[in-house]
Length: 438
Ligand SMILES: O=C(O)C1=C[C@@H](OP(=O)(O)O)[C@@H](O)[C@H](O)C1
Ligand SMILES: C=C(OP(=O)(O)O)C(=O)O
Image (cartoon, rainbow, N blue to C red; front, top):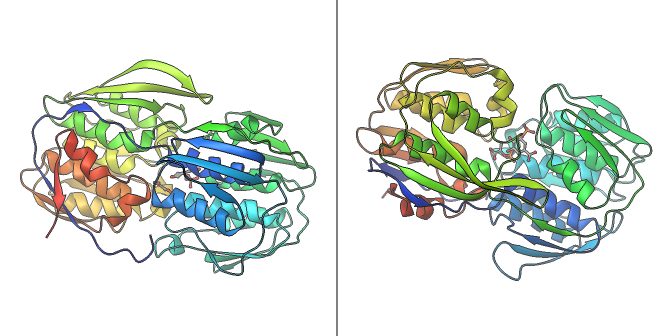
């Protein structure tokens, strides 16, 4: 987590990728399952929990607040919920590690408690904007101190919250979820309206835990003063982790890869549509429902890709997949234009700048714009890139190395463990040639 030792990778060009690739549990669903289980009444059983640093940090925060959490086996958690008002304050800071989701959602949850809390994060999280959640929470009656809008956040306890109707200035599931979680503790109705629909896991999971909630794409509305009842949660495999393999298998000739039982919530699968628009060959097989979420096997075969003007409506549905998309665009024939994606600049790194610098270092023609990029596809040369400690950038360049003209050195990859522990081994199991740099 914070202060991790530096870890560099080398991705070597490789032949066709083959096999079944089972990616770990969904990060968004894992965070939420832990938070709701913690404040529910009764014992919840979570299966498929992501054993990543981000989601473990959320579990550790809730344990610090007095919740008993057992882990009978990897990916399994038994959480003894303390009820809506059963958390106990901690005099020590609550460390969210690298996780924007953890910090922003917990801020909403903690705004309605009787005790004070201080939320801290690692170097990257300490640079991420928090006013987007603290401003509307303040409108609800919360009191939260920031360091000029950045963490650490000091959340004052003992405040009476009241529901508000809030139109989000940006499409963000984290802001929406923070407000809904605060809304559990608020008097009256909390209503959130989004400029474009975002992932609705909080809404679905609140309903699964028995909280009355009305929601439809782009809107959610609930009233304070109900109870959450413990339940079982099955976390699907994370589409965002599958994304690196969708791109890798699409760009390496001869590849066929199957990704079993991946979560296919439509607010997450924008990359699938973008890649199909670029000419990718991606099929969904064995569709079913698990824990109220659509899941299916994704089968991806190599196909020649061409550049596209990415429809802006897809942006929120693939917000974490842009580093991977940029790699696909770099190898595609022709020009790819991305617009309307300024949010990428406030993720674990500035993902537009970091990808542009990295691709340029590999000989790709890419022009940065304030809210996107223009990428002229062609060849990827050998070279060295810096991930800036951003897990998704590191994994995307690992895929780029497969089709580069020589080895690609990727610096600062330790944070891959935040969302995808075991990526290196799993990638190599299907044909990547990824190693640690000396
Ligand atoms: O709610 C969530 O679980 C997430 C929402 C997105 O962030 P924003 O809400 O900032 O768009 C996404 O980038 C993040 O990885 C996870
Ligand atoms: C942006 C991400 O996560 P978070 O905001 O939770 O740090 C991500 O996983 O790509």
